[in-house]
Length: 168
Image (cartoon, rainbow, N blue to C red):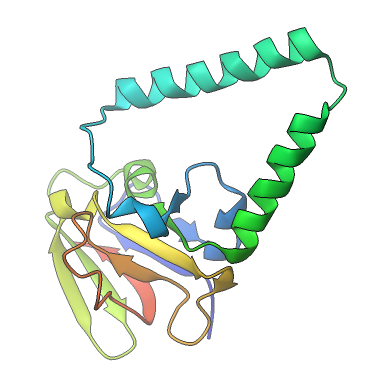
């Protein structure tokens, strides 16, 4: 079984998704808490502002404390490592779909799983969450990803054994 998933079809750019490297991506979300928290409406402008604030805080800390890592940073890093080793994580699908640039006449995303094909309206596809880790382990048996709807309606029965994504 390949851990690589291709996003093809009516897109300007074909995208290769490799869930094995998402653990290092800052966009990952904690699935243990994601569906239980209220979802604020987030626009692309809000995301940009949040990214700017994050980098500003980083540089402010670097300027104030220098490149020397104080004990609090080591503790924070240890906590983050522990969370990665034991946590369940997912990745929002929207950035990948936006980067693929679906054609204007595209209307659905077809998820090709091992034994079935599931068609989802393209507007709803932007809300998908791709789970890639459960309790610190990659999803090897029925993965490489489990797909959840953004509202968590299929939380108990996610789409598994995903092989390919096609925009039609």
